[in-house]
Length: 446
Image (tube, rainbow, N blue to C red; front, side, top):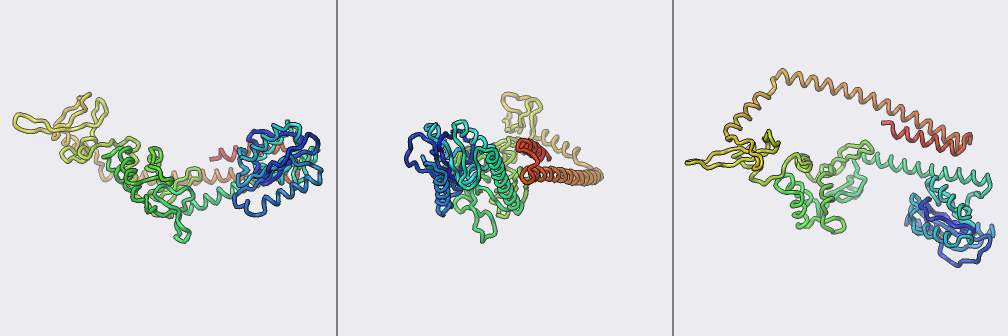
């Protein structure tokens, strides 16, 4: 969390309650019990920030603050490149453990800035309360917080601003990601068989020269219906298909790959309501992809090449037994002087045993009866188009109503922030209660 904390007469807790950033404390020397003992905690959010003056500046500010206040430093904790959005940070946990072991020696935890300490206000107050239970007060080298009523008010306002800043950043990030997705840019980890493309190409993904052909072959082999998933995966692994870490592709990864629409250059992100054409080239055709899906779902059985493509029995695997519901198989039976073709059910059922000629004649008759008249086709077309136009109109109205309700809730949130942060006409409990209610309403508006 980019701040320093002095730990003097209290301990900090283990609970992953706050997002402390970099703990820039290197244990120096533990002094005997007495007033004015403290520990420093500083943090930077990224590895790049450790190379500039961010941490030295924070440490210097904390040291100068402690000197002015007459605090003795028990320990310093330095957190480099770990986000304040989680309390499970290495140096933060060390700080909390130090406070527990030295309860009574630590009186203050000094941080550089509250925004370096925790991004979520709930985490901030939880950690602050835990420190209080250990007899430790939180101090900031740059903000006027203390145990007075005014200091506590300032701490609450600063914690709320820290969360506000974090929420704004998150909204901007999501907004930027959604805008990129709407333009067809792939913003996630590149799928197996693709690589992230250089900006100069104008695309977000390009085929991986080492894996693209093998991914394509996996789809093509599975689409034939002649091989199981295990057989196809084993085959392409043997040919050299590996993960980014050079490991053979596992079953779960292979299943996800066969269902990933990125391979037909489609970007589908339901959370953002995104369904669009990607700005990159597909690895496989839509025909092959949508041939694979019913096989994965079990709606098309996987059979050997002879069973599926044998021209002698075109209805085998498609016509089902009325008794057991399984697809009929077929075979030739030898008579006294000739061979006869029959469709029949599996060995355990045998409810159906019909000649090839009879079943195929019945099938042709059924197709003839099911063929609609030209007038009926025109009527269906008109009805479908009319229903579609009606659905489109209803959808536009629903979207407009949802947007209206969302805008109304956002206006209430803005007024609530104004009342609490600037006019100070409501207390923090009222603010939190109404803000949570409004956010829940905004989430449920769909």
